[in-house]
Length: 289
Length: 250
Image 1 (cartoon, each protein chain N blue to C red):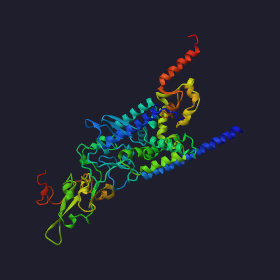
Image 2: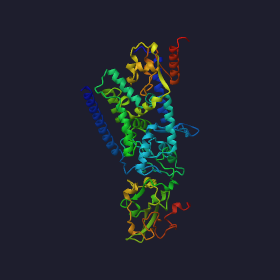
Image 3: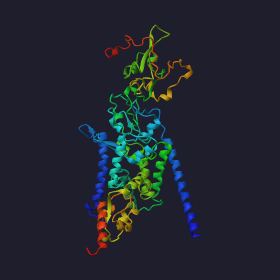
Image 4: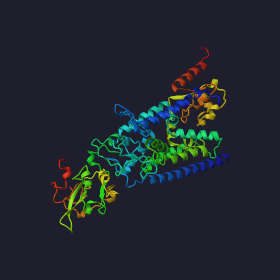
């Protein structure tokens, strides 16, 4: 596992960090250094809702869904923004947000690093499905209490806002999250509890971009399973059948792609994967050709 | 037997999960209730919907904060006495300077700041209240700074003269008219006392209401909605000496 080539083996990790930091920096630069073009703010707002150059709105569809369920109609701007973001992640995979954009990923990956270094084992076991309970509760409580339930307690929101708008006591919430992930439950927040991740996992079911799996070169060494933060998605039997990772819970973090010594895993378009699969199917059925 | 045991196990698990979800849900709901408290010291931006609707509709993006050219607004961090992530301001630090084009409202993507606000003068962020015991004017000094700083001077704040018992001179005291006060807090910012003697607070904290049976039969009269401010005898006239600093303003 330590034979990864540098920097080639870390290509995706570097790319992810670059995207995460660029997103944060663009928000921060617009807020504090008046970044913009021709007087138009480059990226005003934050991950909840933002505006590119004063023209293209973006919004968090999960936050918008909660507000709508709380019984409040919203301006078209934020609805269009949410639709745009939803469309984007429906293409690249819902949980790409988790691995490529969400600032909490930096904290969670840090906790995982510490856990690895110290050789810690989970003291607690929780079913990963619990995130769907939290997701359901978010929506239910939004409707019952008339306020966006998760937005009011979200550690993602706290971290992101306080990174952009100044530090409050949010650091405490994040220290809690870090300790929970590092000492109590491996991948505790992102992999078990986060309702936003659960929401994006549902969107990920229709994703166009997928991790393609080539069974013919796989040696079943299991390295991919060791590095995957959501190992249940790497069901190699099902993946072999579909030619790709099917679960929406895959975060597209590409750790498996980087670690695979046989390069059996790679990003690809779903349409392309299905086409190849059906072509192979066709060849098998008519050996004459 | 085995199917029975399986069924029992299944039901037990279901009951357990339901229990966990209910406990979690109740805890969460309690937390949300705690979060909704807004400090009376925190004012909302102009055009904000009534607090409950505002809190629900605000998506906590901070675009109003970035649009404000004076750095008035800030987003509540954890630890502030304001629902987390929502915009507020404290006028003694930086008041609202009442921009004509109201950029904070224009920046709000959700409508939590209402674009239906016809003009910034119609904003009701709060209402100024005067502590007569520390107001310099009420002590007989010629201060009236709040009156002169007020952007809707002569409507939201007027100066009344009260005869003084001990001398032939009068006392000139500021009087706030809630029907015109936008709650911008420029008066609070300008007040020269160590702690401001004039402060902007949420109207429901200080505003009383005259019972309907005390109103005139046509619904008009003091305290009725839309009533014009009751002013002293000098209404509409410039008082020489009092208004000398604004002699050339209309």
